Image (tube, rainbow, N blue to C red; front, top):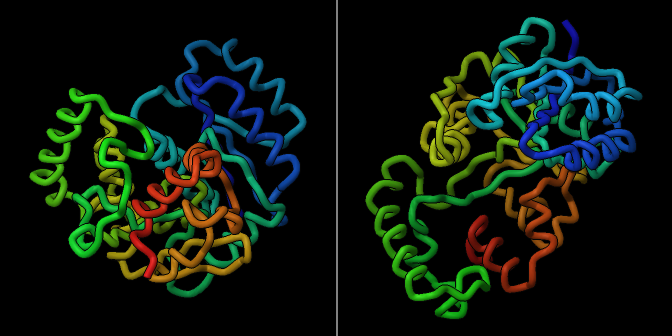
Length: 291
């Protein structure tokens, strides 16, 4: 059995530019540890649709397989793990928008996943809860313009719709999401063993809410790993595996300048490119108010 398989998801709907950015970063940052490279092509209707992608990936050693555009990213990850679980000890999953930032990113993930009692590691995670605000908003209030959300002015109708959504969240979301702090790794740039992954239950994921539930709900990927007695760590650029209570000190996802990130993606870039007020809001959502 080989040790590591790096799995990169390429979705037809996202176009070729994210793949170009990923390959450029992968070329410059191979991971500093031996591994195989698997490309999962999702949603390509005709073989010829992949020709431009094959031209880009030709300089790399890789293997690939195809899946239909059904479900979300995590569905593709489980398909890959199920198909190759007997061939690799660990899988590292990277979504279409991943950009690798450090040359030793893979070895740092690996050095932490092999520690006793560790079941899953990732480059990003959060305490965020879709369960309405949890205890932090009951204790304190974050001050923003009363007519804005993340700096975006809302018209009257948008405020009404926003209010209805908030009411629905208060009724439904507490049933399926833990309150803040709701520890969960994000389902991108994470490493897990095939053995552990085969013990997990993947529900049917048809909607965005289904995807949120599996990433951060009461039966999430993270919660399932914790429930079988394993730790879950964020691994940062300094090589440290941060335990859950210290994730907000890792300087990774939506913190400071995210200067300790191993792998970027569309969500970390949104924060990086945001104005200061928007950054404060996003950081507050992920980590609460700093004491």
